[in-house]
Image (cartoon, rainbow, N blue to C red; front, side):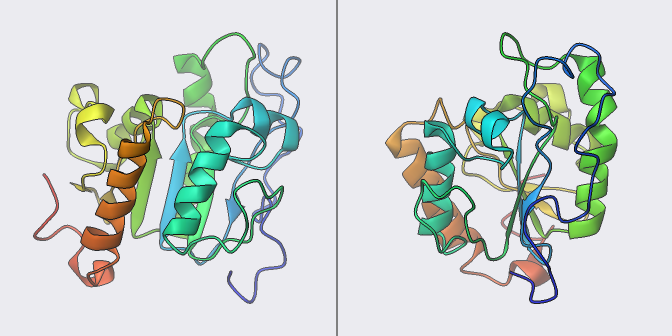
Length: 213
């Protein structure tokens, strides 16, 4: 983690009592802002908090989906903690969401995504990542519409899983939704990042050969 960073939880001091979405503010448990290394090259973006993160307030913790991502981070050398850690120790990875509150019975509406966009935009600007990993279809569409020249509605997370897509100033490496992944999907993602991203100087080659248009 960045040695100048005081703590990994909501390091930019975003509003933890946000009440901008009237249909979410009374049913959520926590507003779940970003967590991790503010000097990270890799930003992992989910669509919305899972039930575990809603309970703990820490992205991708407290449930099976979160434990899968934490295992992935460990396999890639981004985490020094066990997969079930309540506050994982991350290095070179920052975790955040497209939307920050969880409705227990439905996904976010387009209006809620738009309302939360300022938080994600601030995360991207503050972190300035080299690689963004959108997790799941909702996150892929949300990130692609702002940060690539691709038709976001035409992108399939199943087809784009464990590939690299050229973005505006960085690369996207989409990941299938954590609850939808098979072990083979997880292995394919880890292998792609380890061999096709980390095994080259991605800081110098982003947007060049090896990245899809």
